[in-house]
Length: 147
Image 1 (cartoon, rainbow, N blue to C red):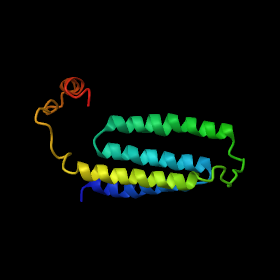
Image 2 (cartoon, helix red, strand yellow):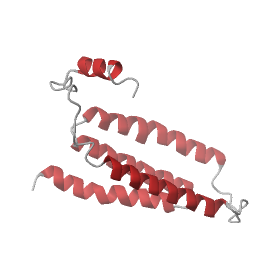
Image 3 (cartoon, rainbow, N blue to C red):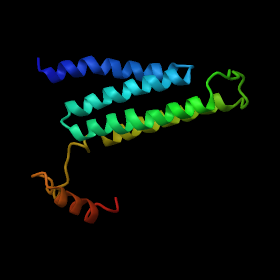
Image 4 (cartoon, helix red, strand yellow):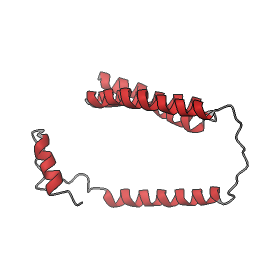
């Protein structure tokens, strides 16, 4: 079994678990720390995909600078206050569930309509066959700039 698969299957559950734990946390500081864990696991995925620059950017910019900013704001606003659990907008929860169902239906329809489209490449899209970024940008900003 390749080492890439082992690393992926170790970090994938950690990534999913930290994302779910981040969403379910009541304490904002704990949620931010779970987000840091998620950022690091995503950085490992970038490294597995052969993108060391994105790995470094993910660690330095997101897990470093942005999370320090988030934690600074959380600490500045104060997390020792108790939040009221009484909803001020009574129709907010059913409305959000309805919008969520509509977005899910739209997503399912878009995926069903797009099946097979992603496997066909346009016939004139051979600019990046050798990895030339100038040729790719020329195709993107001339032929495909409007779509």
